[in-house]
Length: 293
Image 1: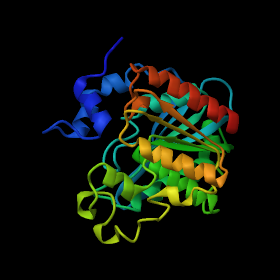
Image 2 (image 1 turned 90 degrees about the horizontal axis):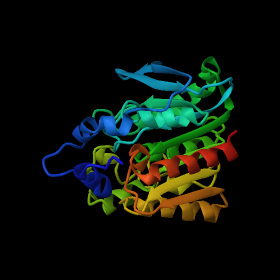
Image 3 (image 1 turned 180 degrees about the vertical axis):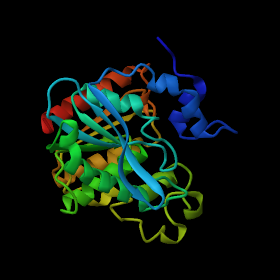
Image 4 (image 1 turned 90 degrees about the vertical axis):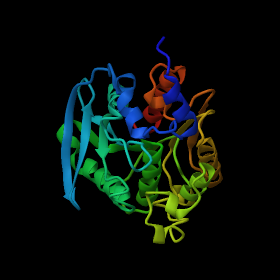
């Protein structure tokens, strides 16, 4: 079995890159490991234009399942600390969910520091509404809609779920929240970046005012969430974030599954050699099938 390289594994277990290494370079270096040999799907539509905004071409890679539709829809937001990543760094992930039967809309939202909050959130909410209006053109059924993401993308997905639960967006059947940040300020403090000037996502002057804003910290507005699948590994520095959200969901009576994978690091849904990879997709797909199909 292929092993996870030490430098990549160390990064995923700490979210701190090796000294002198840009984390974006790790994604490039190990792209073949994370995205090679994706499962076959019915069709792929790359870089579909959703809108032009603030000089950004908001687009999505759409992966269509095999077989006759209409298919349930998963709108997906990639991770990358709000500053890096794209549908291309999460290519295989999108194809895996399409292979499981979901029309997957993998969104290329604006990223910091050039585009700070609320740019990414606004793009993700717009993309969710776009999917409802256009899914049928690609064989999708927007009445069976899930919204998901990993890491920073799970933060954005949680914000979209909170917004939609307040009738400010489309109806969503389920959430897919993979090792996410759900209390932004608490998570950054836990990672050793507790000060406004140390982070790149929020405008520094707005940092304190946004402390419990659901678009930044969906933990504080999860009472109206649809059923949610949460997954995180025991070696993930963001483990406490998923525990905290699960506790809030339980208190609010929201159906959810918290799947904790022993020994798994951050981003294991992108690391095919790990046993947690196949187990994570199996459990996530089963949850979506129960609540969306």
